[in-house]
Image 1 (tube, rainbow, N blue to C red):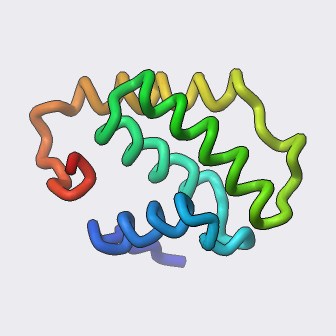
Image 2: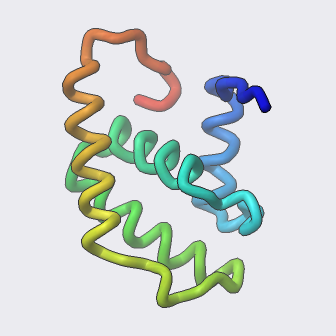
Length: 101
């Protein structure tokens, strides 16, 4: 099974769908969580990303009828921290301009 990287346009379309709570629940997996978290980190920084991810996850789960007990603050905080640290370490790597808008 081969996997292809998403284009910037695909990433942002998925991010927008998450924010609008229209992202298909069946496709909301770990990769989708991480991509969404990275967009938040790049747009809003560490603390802003944590706030937006927390609120976004809770809103999304409620809107799509997901498991409300599935949200875990410690796990969300840990992943945002990891993404922010990784993003800082890769600061000189090529960036996706629209994600930083």
